[in-house]
Structures are given as structure tokens and as C-alpha cells.
Length: 544
Ligand code: NA7
Image (cartoon, rainbow, N blue to C red):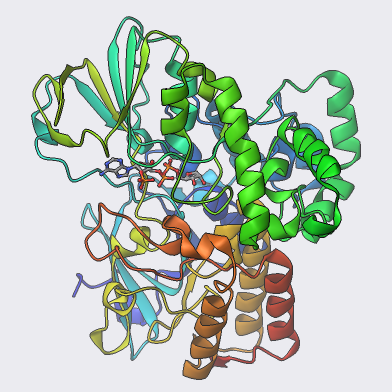
């Protein structure tokens, strides 16, 4: 057990609410907790706020959703004051935005940085949580709200010799704050997910030589980013109500929603015209604005997939390289679609080389570079764009101990089990914002998060107003929700494809099985369900 809390003598916890994480979710949570007058604090592992936008400083990091659909919607004043400079803002601007929000609402006073939580233990007699930080501090709280990010547990590949490399090497998530000089350098990138694709596109013409080690290619499509000029800025600011209303109507919480026409009812010529239009439009329309059956029906998906493959062949000059960049193990859209800016054109450059590690596997990292079954490569810099132990990974890295000494890590070993992705039995007073099986992790994050935070804030207010001290889901509610989450995986092409949506990660032991990580029912259904729960006086939860 951690050392005794400072207030244990009075049997009141140090805080009513502790929030772990000062990213997009934690910032809004702290705004709401302050608004409601709770005694709370935010514990953040980093030395500043920003979460995803604090850590991911790799070259090319930017939004794939329109900036003005990503920012917070809760303050009209904030919407009026802040001007995004690009339709899809980069990391630095987004970090500045979050700093601006924290300053405007004076939220920093509630945040403790360099405060990595090591463990959280539930005390059954008091219904309090006791947290221990890595630097040895103990804090107690009635409610524990996690805002620890869905992609915040970065994973390195299990390759022999990684630690022996004598040049510089980074995981993209842990990209240093100081400027890294890439000019004139021989650089390796391992990984071609959304991160690798942004990074490769950005650095291809800046480094002397770039070698990309690819295991499975993804279906990528153009982002079509551009600056926001004064006219566009004025229009955006005047139409925020419509923008957010539109996001509320789509299953993904983006401005792009599915085309309701049946794919088979649209003549082939019109389909192709429509697809050309999607391909040349900015953002996720190419994925989420398509006919619904493209993501559900194998025939429709195969035709669209061929259309996109054709685009890759048009853009990559060398047919052998184009073939390597075309996925063969999954159709378009069944994994997260990376949006790119001249990604495919990067491979037309003489200084960029693509290594398919299925043909020539990586054997080891050496002091000088990387050895495959065929070649000894020498590099100055190795970049690992190898992704995350998604969604549950951040929970697994904290010792979360609930009733009867049960650990959350053990409970979720074969996959998460939750009610609404917000609570799990055996862990009262723990609310997992952006937790597994919630809609926030499968939709435009800030849109989902604002709703979950509002819902949670109302719940805590309800608890306080009615003098309740603990909340937990019932076993039946948890079972029913987890089954519902599983049923939403049926029929969709994404559920049969290995990706972080389905919980696979080759770099984490035990994560080579299907795990039901996200809510595929969409933001609308999720929102309805949250509202029903409130209307039914929190049916499915036990409040005491
Ligand atoms: P992703 O999408 O999980 O991509 C990770 C990439 O790294 C992917 O191409 C993996 O190949 C590759 N990878 C992982 N481990 C290895 C090993 N051991 N050897 C070779 N290649 C490997 O993470 P990202 O950071 O790109 O994107 C995460 C999300 O951030 C993204 O969806 C956005 O929402 C924002 P694989 O495909 O598994 O064969």
C-alpha cells in the first residue's frame, strides 16, 4: 500500500476529483470541474499540457480532421478569438491552441506536471482512490477520472540490437523538443501507419537519403491541406453553429458523413465521377463520405479499392514500387486511412528507397544501422513510427487496483469489458474518459470527448446533489454493453482486419488476438444511449 495520505487522519480525501492527463480531454475536464466548483487536481506525466499534441512533435504531425471541427466547441468567445491558419493544422499550432485555452480559462493552476501516476488503489471502506506518483507522492481522491489518451503508450518493435545503435534514434511519439537536424543525414523510418506516412512525406526532400522499412502498406489518400485566408476565416467563424450541428449528425463526428445512396443503384460512370470528386476533396471525405456499402460490402469495397490502387499506380512512377505500396491484405478503409501530402510522390525521388521487410526481413539493429536478410544498411538516424499499444495500453502502464485487490490489467487481459466505455465493475468511482469501447475512441476525438466530459460532469454533480458517495456499473449492464460492442463488429470490414481498432499489436505480448477496443455503433447511437441513461435516472449504474 502507498504511504498514508496527508488527510487520512480526518478521513476526507485530498481531492474530490483527480484527473490523470492534461491533454485535449483533461483540459476540458478541468474546465468543467472548476465550473462545478469541485476540489480537484490534474496529474500530468509531461512537463507541460497538450497530451498527443505535446508528445508527437515529429516532422509532419498534423490534423487529419478539419481544424475548425477539432477545436473545442464549448465557448463561443474562444471560437471567435482563435483563428486556425490552415484547414488541417500542424502540431505546433495545435499545441499553441491548447496553451491558449488553458491560459484563457486559467486552468494551469489546477495542473501538476512531471507527475506520472504509478498506481491507483481503491479503498473499499472509504470508497476513495489512493494514487502514488513516480516521484513518491501520495494523493487521495473520491473520484478518479482518466484522460490518459487513446494512443499514448508508444511501442517499440521487438528487434534485436535496438539499444546498440550509435546514431540518433527516436520513437515518433517521443520526438525531442529541440530541433533535430535531418539535413544531409541518412535516415531510416520503420512503420507506415498514419504517423510514418506524415513523417516520410515531410522529410523526403530534406534528408540526404531515406530508407523506409515497410511491413504492411496502408491505403493512403490526399489530405489537400491549404491555408485559411481572411474570407474563409470569416465564413468559418460565422458558421460554427452549422459546422458543429453537421458533426453531430454524422456517425464519425466529422463534417464528412456517408452518402446515403446504394452503391449498386448509382451507374458506374456516376460512381467514378463521385469517387474522383472525393479523391480531389480535402479531408476524410474519401473514406467517410463514401457510399455506406463501400465499408460494409465486399463487392463495393473491392471496386473502390481498385479505384484507389489505380491512383497509387498513377502517382508512383516505378510499377514495382507502386505494387509494394498497394495493400493486398485488406480493402480500402478497413484500417485507419492515413491522409497524406505527396506521400506517393516521395517514392519517385532518387534519395528515397522502399524496403519490403516481408521480402527481406530486418534481422537486427546494429551500432551503425539496420541489417536485413539481404543488406547491411548504415544510418545516421533511425525513426520508429511503430505505433501504440492502443487505448488499453495507457491503462496497463498504471497499477490500477480495484475491489478485492483485482488489477485492471488482469481484468482486461483478453480485451476490455466495460459499461459505455466509461466504467468497469470492481472499480467504483473510476470513470475512464476516452476509455476502450466508448465512441470517443472511434470518432472525431474532441467531439466525442466534449460529450463524454459533459455527461461525466453532470453525473458527478448529480452524485453531489444527492449525497451519493460511490458509483459503479451493474454486472448485467456491463455484460450487455460489452456484448453490444462486440455485435457492432459484425458485418463491418474493419472488424476482420488486424489494426489497433481490433486490438492487434505485434510488439506487445498477448495482443495477437481480436480485442473489442472501440465502439463501432457511431456517435449518434452512443449519444442516444448516454441520454437514455440520464433519463432513466442512471439505470445500469449503482449509486450509493
Ligand atoms: P499505426 O497505425 O499502428 O502504425 C504503426 C506502423 O508501424 C505500421 O505500419 C506497422 O506495421 C509498423 N510496425 C509496427 N511494429 C513493427 C515491427 N515490429 N516491424 C515493422 N513494422 C512495424 O501507428 P501510427 O503511429 O502510424 O498511427 C496511430 C494513430 O495515430 C493513427 O491511426 C492516427 O489516428 C493517429 P503493420 O501495419 O502492423 O504491419
